[in-house]
Length: 145
Length: 277
Length: 106
Image 1 (spheres, chains in turn purple, green, blue):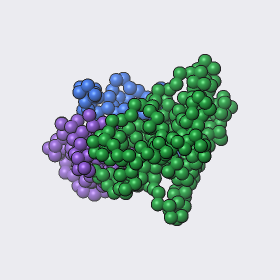
Image 2 (cartoon, rainbow over the protein chains, first blue to last red):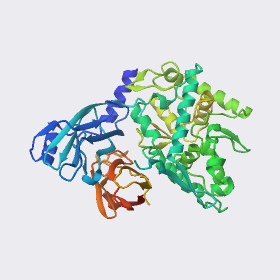
Image 3 (spheres, each protein chain N blue to C red):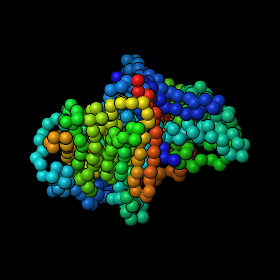
Image 4 (cartoon, rainbow over the protein chains, first blue to last red):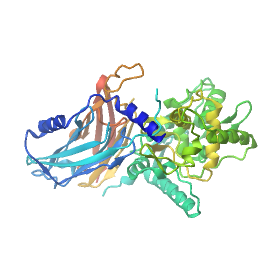
């Protein structure tokens, strides 16, 4: 009985997303930003709940360790996903006047997937962090028709 | 550090004066919600609100008034409260004055019995009675943003206060009808509300925690809807989920269930307008 | 007029790093969902969010359809001088919204 409700929910939720970004599309989108420069793990903290109650609105924030001075600061923060219809989530541009390299927002996630956050520094480095997010599906959805 | 405490929700009071609730003060109201929940827990009361069942990220979204999307609607409601409407050319404020004073605790006492011929109404029903009778304006459409915004604004004035359904005998029959609906199996899945929200509350259905079904946060910004919605909309969702035929919009069944559920949640703190998954 | 809720301090000490939070009512329709008639609902999103302080850009964000409905953004900036912070959202179907906040820096 619970399984039937679950399957109905899963079908309705997934159907609209016939198109899907792939790991290749994700890699391409990242390459567009980095120009092929290598990604280094570290300095970036991606704060997103590991299990999400509804993929329609997922709170997340990215913070980057940086002195945020004129000659060493985070120029941009880029966030990508693996399985939405498009790999792009957002790009945010910062400057030393930001004081702190921290950006928060809320995103949509079509499915359980990997999120990648990249920090681009004034010194041409690309730091990154990623997180696996599990999306649970609301049990009683609006219409099953 | 700078004074983040300056941030506030603002609206125009009937006197024309700009009314502000500093977010810090709203924070105290939320602390009130927390303490009231704690008090209930310590008294051996096992009831838990939908707010308590949410993860920390969603609780934080509700608690922060610049992050809670329902506050966008509250802002619209605050403007509507002060705007003149209808042939009478009156605003809500012209009769009720400052909502922070006159509406305090009001949302915690609905559904209630309105003077004949109206009879029992919920908060949205009461707002529409004011529109049609006192403002001589057309009723706002059920589930419309305009109606939900006013309801959210009025509900906010009761945040942290205990749910206190009136002891009006005219409500007894309605509550009994609501209880009967709540306990009756229906639909293709042959489920009653009680099967999930009493017998299996706290367990998971399709990954989501089944709440006890206490209506402490309405109108809610439901992430599933990406919009504000009333308890009637949520109840309709449940009925559809049970694969039963939903009642017509505005049917007494929704009001009866709401009256029963509010009575069942008596004493719990209102936390609306809330965020729910 | 667009419905916007912005939380920024009214006063700040010079050199302080302050947080600004902004919420705007917008459907953020992805352009990937079919409507009740089975046809795809056209994309309607906020694409660009730009913030200036006395005319100087302090933050910019490019949004995609993956940003949730009623977009919420929080970011930081250093309080340098008294003045006006202008937050501007723009996107599909000619959508433009602007909100101004005065901040006194002492």
